[in-house]
Image 1 (cartoon, rainbow, N blue to C red):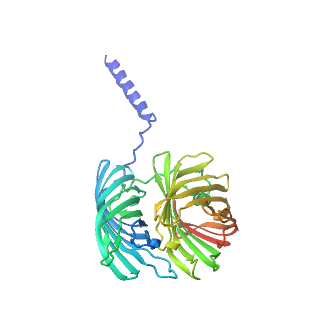
Image 2 (image 1 turned 90 degrees about the vertical axis):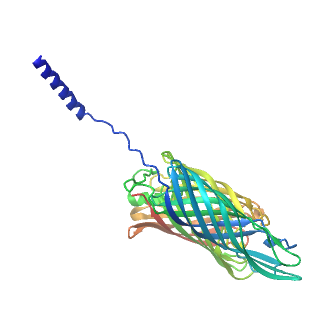
Image 3 (image 1 turned 180 degrees about the vertical axis):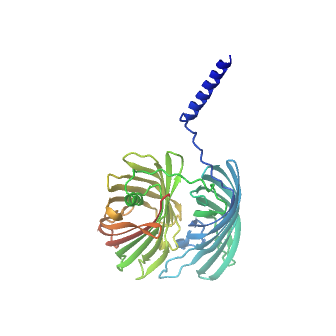
Length: 476
């Protein structure tokens, strides 16, 4: 019995030792959910519009108001599981201008600033927040009346109720981006004149914003994971291919200067600087949404006077749903919309535009070849401005070489479907070169290219010089 007990103990120890040597697959460590609670501050830009008007006969030119808005916001969030409650205050300056006309107008209206405060409630799913807000707001307005028997200038600050909704995404531990729509219902403003003139100023706003959270959304030991679209080429070439891919899983901030020569009836130079940050938004392990915002800063030749009008144009927002593990063909589809944010009517359409957009590309060897497509129609905004139906196609072809150098061609082909057939298309041809390099530790892509418009409407530019500098933020 003694020797039998010793044998059983030895066998048990041996089995335990063998079991300890066996390979055991550890369960995956789940990524901690994003924490939305805490105080935040941020900034926003966007567009605002109203169908309100000065009820003056024959003054329809100022029958609607569109404007560029920009400002700051601050707030506090409290998260309870998948639910969020908070409060937020915004203050935005509003910029509206109007082109000089050869004859005086009968009246005009402008706004100087917009302030709001509202409660927020939303549903949280990891890095995503979908929210609604309700509260109040204030708008400071100026008006000028100038017609027979009436000459009056006045200003007032009015209050009203606010309702809105939006979506926010935490793309870094301390940083979030958001897109929201707000409706601010204001009381009517009636001038103390005879006859009295009434102004309806209910305001609609679309804002693009970024917030800095004082409390980290993720523990310091947790780093976000990214899934790339390609294999493992050299570092410079991999970075070049990502910078040339409109739907790459990489944060980037391109600054694109488009200098157009011989524009307008006086053959002046048009300058359009597009600031277009790209931020990937992770939906799950299989899908990303790529956010691409385009804010143009424009110097536009005046069609009446031999001069240029300078300011902000209409802001465009694109979203592309794209798989994280594509095949040979990389693709993304989604919506595109444009808000009437121009600081002067000559710099924008005055209409809210919306439509579909898509990107298709492939990366064989050293090449990046693809096309970006979209079409937008007017769906809102100032009803007294012309309707819009515009098509855009941007084919792109890039060849990457040693030491970060590359050749590039990406002409922007556009069509105005509402114009006469011989005034509809702009078709450029051309190309240029660029390079990936670093400024300190900051990766940068820079390129320059020239394009000639072989097909163009009357008074449109004949040549374009495009220079682009892109700040790249690959995950480390």
